[in-house]
Image (cartoon, rainbow, N blue to C red; front, side, top):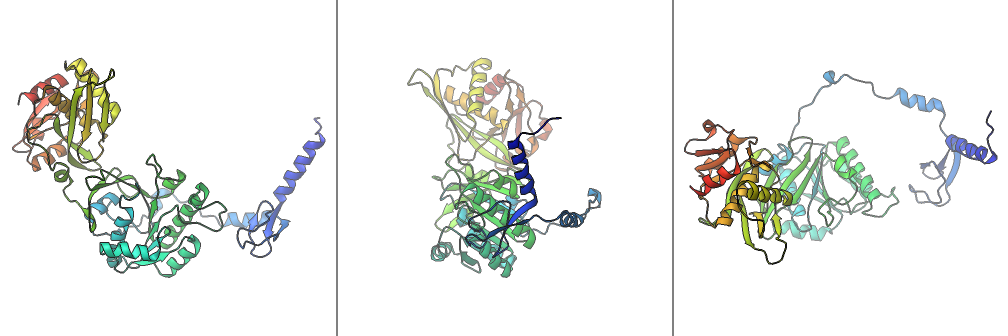
Length: 466
C-alpha cells in the first residue's frame, strides 16, 4: 500500500478544510471562499470570519427547487411584440423593430454618430413605448442636453448621468423604463467588482448585470461599445455573446454617409444594413440607398461597372471602379478599398491567364464608390469588367450591370437571388445585364436584355462590344 509523504498529508488537510469552510462578512454577510482584508460589499476592514460551509441538506434543498425538464414541443412560444422606432430602415436592421427585454450592442469609430442615432431613437420611442432612459457615463447632463437640443430630440427622454451601475439600475427600474441606452459599457462600473473601470472583468460584470436587468424587467437595452484601433469592440469577446444583437457603424465619413450593419441578430437576419446621411441636424435615413451610392457616376468613364449586390436581405446597386497605371517601382501595387484585396488578386490573375489581359506589370487600384464594403463573390464579374474597361480605356454602357462568381479556370458561376438583382437593376433604369449562363433569359424583367456568359473572356468581349 502506498504511503503518503508528510507534505501530501498537509496539502490534503488544507484542501479538506477549504471544502468545509467559508468566510462571511460580519457586517453585510458577503460570502467568500477565501479570507479578505476588505469586504467588497460594505468596504469594511477585517470583517471576515471563518464559518462552516452550508450543510449538504441545504444544497439538496436548492436542487429540489430546480426547474423541471420540459419537452421542446410543449413549450409555449409567446408572440414577439416589437416596438417600432419610426425609422423604417433601422427597424429593418433590427429584424422588424425593438424586442422588449433584448440587449443590443452598437459599436463604431469615435464620432461616427452612435450617441446621435440613439438619442433620436429614444425620442421616437418615448412617444410609442413609454418611459425611456438615457444613462450617460461619459458626458455630464448639460453636455447631453446640448446635443439633444441641437438635434431637436430632447422630448420626453429621461436622463441619468451616472457611472455607478447598480444604483442607476435600481432608479431606472423604479421609473418603469421600457427602453434604456447605456453610453457606454466601458464607462460604467459595479462596486462589487474590484477591477478598474473599462477593464475586461468590469465590462464583463456590467454586461451580465445589464442582461439580467433587461430580461427581468422586459426593458429593451441599447449598449454603446468603444472600439479598438483594429475596429473590434473593446472588452471581452463574451460581451458580443451575451447580447442579442450586434450592430456596427461603418462607411465613408468624408462623404457624410454612415452604414449601420447587423453582424448578429437573434430576432432577425444578419448582414442587414441601414444607410444614413450625416447633416447639421444629425443623421437622416436614406430610403433608396442604391440611388445614393450611384450619385455622381460619370456617363462615359472607363474603369466603371455597376453590380447589384445583395446586402442582408435586399439588393443594392453599387459602382465598382478600377484604375490601372504604370508601375513606378519594380513590384506593381494592388490596392483595394471596400473590396477584398485577396479577391482582387485572384481576379487579376484570372484575367491575365484566361482572358489575355496583360495587367501583371501595372499598378491596380479598385474600390466601391460610397464606402459600403462588398464581400460576396457575386461582384467578381463586375470587378473584372471594370479592370478590363480601364485596361483598354473603353467605357462600358452606362445602363449595364454585371454579376457572377469567377472561378480559377475562368468559368462564371451562378449566384443566389439572380431574379431580385435583375429586378432592382431594371427598377433603376438599367437595360443590359451580363449574367452567368445558368441564369434563364425568362428571369429578366420586361425591357431588360440579358447577356448570359459562361467564361470571363466571353464576358469581357461581350461587354466591351456593346
